[in-house]
Length: 430
Ligand SMILES: Cc1cc2nc3c(=O)[nH]c(=O)nc-3n(C[C@H](O)[C@H](O)[C@H](O)COP(=O)(O)OP(=O)(O)OC[C@H]3O[C@@H](n4cnc5c(N)ncnc54)[C@H](O)[C@@H]3O)c2cc1C
Image 1 (cartoon, rainbow, N blue to C red):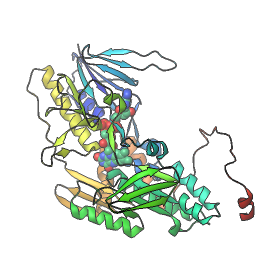
Image 2 (image 1 turned 60 degrees about the vertical axis):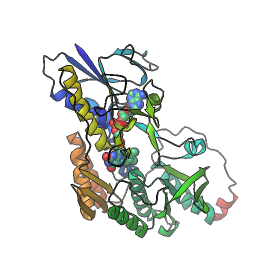
Image 3 (image 1 turned 45 degrees about the vertical axis):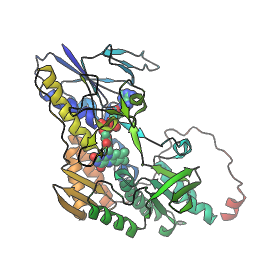
Image 4 (image 1 turned 120 degrees about the vertical axis):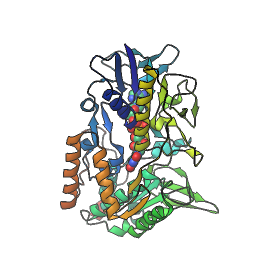
């Protein structure tokens, strides 16, 4: 029996296992084990729509056990990888001791985490949306001081890539839609500011599509700061600078999408890393460790045409998972390995209500058509059929009804009430 252990139940790991399962016969002598700390695949491309309340959180979470047919799944957090003994050790839990798993072949697909480039202040103070937005609206509605109210209603997004731009569009829609429920807040008081260090947004997109997206966002009222860098953020002020100038934006909420690196566990591993990510060869095998492959956001692969690393996307991760599955079978059967050649079939981004940009097989599409195409393609990409139907129901509900602006804190509200500010002003206000 040969054992293939796949670490990480994201786009790369799950696609790899799906492909491996296909070639597995009932009397196979290969054992496939997927280990991940959560028992679901998070469908991240729809995350901005979850954050804006368009899609229900559970509907973008795909239970891994319903995707796996022949492979086995173990829920656990990887503690360390020892390629010398071919072992992976897992952390224990309060209820269970940690274990060690042997492998013959290993796939590392543990994904990534935000990279704050050493700016610990920003790391400490950045947010991950949703409840925070509703919280700010609730507080702003009761805030009599104009300056304080403005800061509550200002949201700074750092990063003009895929996730930053999609988040900006969704967040702005959410804020504008929500204002009709808040009598003391007008649409013009809401600010979404995108800070991007490059001269254009959506790097990697065709220039005219990126320009279209930029103009569409500005037309909606989203403020853009190109060629600008966030220098600091302390939960009340964001310092932004550019060549020859700087600006202080009064804001209590900052959403970080600018940098991404491999998860900490990978950075601590024995594998050679470049910018925190595992360096792989053309076959996606880790240099110096035959039989160990790496894919997705935790690996680094250069685009030979542009001479820069490929942008981390779910599409790239899944394509890598597929090739690794092929190469694992080839290794086991003593056949030659395939080189990984990446040619993205499409690039797409939704930039807010009923508008998007897309490049599909060289054809450029923008506006409503791109938005519809995005929905069709990503719906098709969801690996669990019942979740697709649920997302369709959510989208239909979004077309017909108002957004759900409830702030769900009742599940984890434990903190005591604190007297942060004098109540005199509030008394007067009421
Ligand atoms: C807001 C947002 C929007 C995006 N939009 C798009 C889009 O429109 N199109 C697109 O193609 N891409 C998009 N992406 C990027 C895409 O989601 C990622 O590139 C993709 O998820 C990477 O896949 P992966 O398998 O490498 O990692 P992940 O999907 O992150 O999976 C890694 C898995 O490993 C697990 N794991 C991590 N550490 C451990 C550990 N120590 N032990 C056990 N398990 C562990 C994690 O729980 C996770 O399940 C977006 C990303 C974000 C954040």
